[in-house]
Image (cartoon, rainbow over all chains, first blue to last red; front, side, top):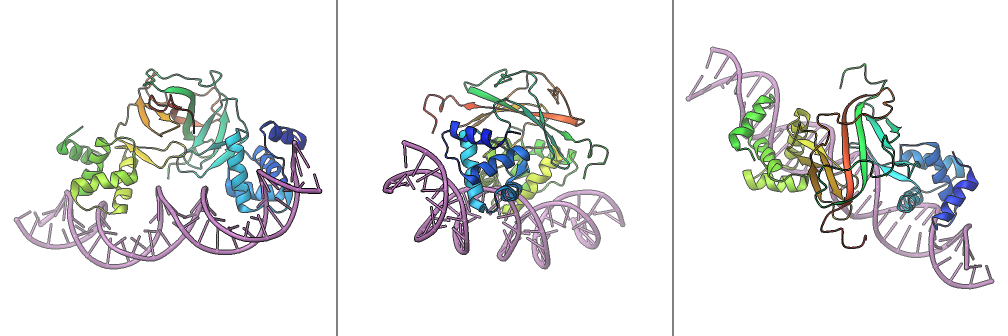
Length: 143
Length: 143
DNA sequence: GCCCGTTTCTTGACTCGTTCCAGGAAAGGG
DNA sequence: CCCTTTCCTGGAACGAGTCAAGAAACGGGC
């Protein structure tokens, strides 16, 4: 988890102004990967005192557009954010409790896979989501 | 595209009652792969006259639960449905216009991939989404 | 063929996450 | 130091999807 100076550098490198809400949200995403916006609002407030609802939404959009955080949204889930970007990793999602876990990409850089027939598409990324049941949910029967 | 009798057989085989809305929705999904619920409501109504909003939502849920249709939902898109099930194929999605195209799975049956580290998860499916730009959108600059 | 109990459909209101809007205050940075 | 961007308060809109209660229809059994 990067320190405040590193986060500030990251913001500047992306051409963004450095503000307290942005540092707080960025830090919160690093500290709590895969959580929803609601939780991030709470985590950001715990860091900086008071941050408004839409400041966080706004910051998250700016950060995702800049590529500093990544937005993920498996089926049936609300938007979640993570700070691991650029390493082309994938995700394990539990069908039962919704837990998300990172997995390193087995093959390397994006796009780590190429389809048998690309249909004329110019492909830049292959997103892989592994669906199953986490160690906690696996023993119990499906709902 | 199967005829009405085949659709009816499919419903019965899944242990479901055969109703006009169900036949209409199932036929509509076969006729219009990868479309959203709104469009399916329209297509179903074109077939059977009047079908309510949530009859379609309800039917779609029952059909997905039974495995007769598959629900897909790329990021930034609403829920979409398709009738190709059981062949573990994947999708190409255009970042620009949202078009979705099927691609056959290169490896075979599900899960066609296994992660380097499964984190203790019991994995039953690997969902692969290739992101890029379709032949129509590829030449024009990103928005 | 007809009946009846269960499933399914209809109608309409409602939730939830998210976005947008406006006006004014604050703070970053050239 | 001043201009611009960003943030705040507060509200209101939005669309996809859901809930609830009663009406209709499916289909197994007679």
